[in-house]
Amino acid sequence: MYTRKATVAASVGLHARPAAVFVRAVNRTGLPITLAREGLAAVDGRSLLEVMSADFEHGAEIEIGVGACEADIQSVRAAVDELAALLLTDLTDPA
Image (cartoon, rainbow, N blue to C red):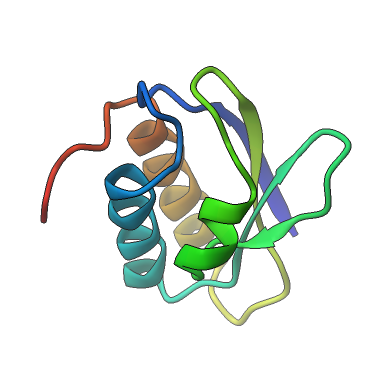
């Protein structure tokens, strides 16, 4: 398992559009990504409903994790690093 911490920079947190942008990016990785915040259970980063329900607000430090998968560690690290970098943006890209 590989994990990395990141801070949510979007002014509204991971809600509505920012959550949708992030979840699309997670799904493009094809990896079993989880998101967790201290004191709360991890949620499936591929699920818009779970991500929005977790209430990751602006400034929250979350842990991005990848469970067991067949991808090589370099690919996993690159994907998680890209997701962490995405969290540091406003996440308003409609793509």
